[in-house]
Image 1 (cartoon, protein in one colour):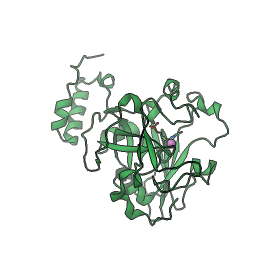
Image 2: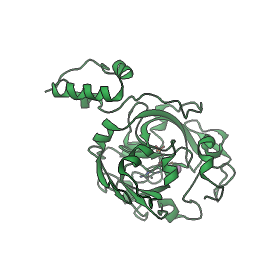
Image 3: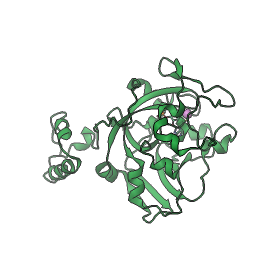
Image 4: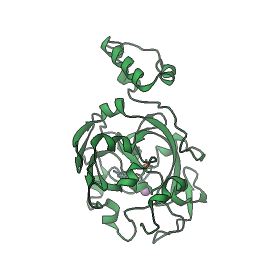
Length: 305
Ligand SMILES: Nc1nc2c(c(=O)[nH]1)N[C@H]1C(S)=C(S)[C@@H](COP(=O)(O)O)O[C@H]1N2
Ligand SMILES: [Mo]
C-alpha cells in the first residue's frame, strides 16, 4: 500500500524535535501504517542538523562537481569523470558492517539500525586528494568515536583496519585493473579514529551518499589525503599492530600509513604546496593538516609519514 505523504512534511518538525522523540514518533507512525511510503521519501537522517564546531569557512563545492569527479578504482582505475556513469549495478542497501578483532562486543552492524540510532550531524569539511585536487563538502555522518565506544575496544586495540566491498559483477574497474590487491583496505591509529573530526559518513549534500562517493558507508578524516578515506566499508577490525594499507602496499615510497596533508612535504613526483579546487581547478595554497591543525597537531610528533 502506498500512501502519498505531503512533500517534505517531516522536515520542519525534525528541526524542533530531539532525536529520540523523533524516532519514537516515526515508530508510532510506522506502526499505524502512515509511513509505508517512507523509503520513497529517502528514509534516514537526512537532512541532519548542521554542526558548526569544526567549520573553517571554506566555500562549499557545488554538488554536481563533487559527485562527478571521483577516485574509485573499483569502478574505473584512471578516469575520474567516468566513475559516476559506471555505478548503476551497485546495490548499497541492505548493508552490514562486520566488527571483529580486539573488542569486547564483536558484532555485525546493520546499517539500517545505525541510521536510526547514531548521533548524525552535517559537517562541512575540506577534502584534499594526494594528487592535489581539492573540494569542500557537507557530509552527513557521526563521530567514529560513537561506534568505537559501542563495540568496547580491549586495551590492546591500537589501530582500526577497514576493508571495503569487492563485487566483481557490480564494479567494472576490478576487471580493468586486476593487478591491484583488492579489496581496498585502509587503517587509522586509535587516537586518530577517536579524534572528534573523524567520521563515518553515509550522506552528502543532505542526501544519502551516491555510490561514486562511497555509498553507503565510508570514512572521512579531513586532515588526511583522500586515499585514507575508504568507501563502501564492509568490515572494521581492531588490531594491536599497525595494519597494512592498499596504497602503501602498492607504492610504499610514495604513500605512507599516516598520509597527513602537509604542504611542506612533497610527493616524490610532485609538489604539495598548492592545490587545485574542483571544478575550475583554481590554485590555492595547501594548508597544514588541510586546515585542521588545531584539532590534530597534538597527536603527532612530526616523524609520521
Ligand atoms: N574503496 C575505495 N575507497 C576509496 C578510493 C578507492 O579507489 N576505492 N579512492 C580514495 C581516494 S584516492 C580518494 S581521493 C577519495 C575520493 O573520494 P570522492 O570520490 O568522494 O571525492 O576516495 C578514497 N577512497
Ligand atoms: Mo586520492
